[in-house]
Length: 214
Image: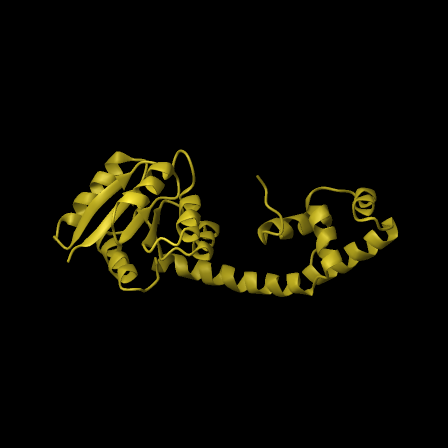
């Protein structure tokens, strides 16, 4: 039985090229295509397929938004991210959401087919060249998790206010504590997360999704 594939990418030439490549040996069949996120999500309701090749960059919504929707609705399909992004943060986000695979668009055709076969068989597939950066980031994130876990609930509240740009007086008013207490909390926070100023503390909060920038 052929592997049934859906391709979601906003470039028609890329979709056509991938379709021809995958269908050449007769073991795979592209049964659906989508040019944007909403079209992709609507196809999920009506078309039966085994794996979705999903681009991150689409004109209406991110492919990662589509991935989150797929996981939220518990669609029983595999998702292979196919993208131009080699930045580890994109990969890390895709892994966190639950992508089954992540591969670059400039990969060789043999690697794309290998990735599809691996994912269909129940394995996770990440392009080999991306794994060292991912491992390094995961190690760093584990260290950050230990730092986060060391913060008290009040210290976490203060850190969030720092990341939102509040000065000590504003934090004191917001949390109904004294400025002196705020200063003590900030001193403890800096020691626990190993930073030396408010800017570094804010970066730490953003990097670890303690706050989100829109």
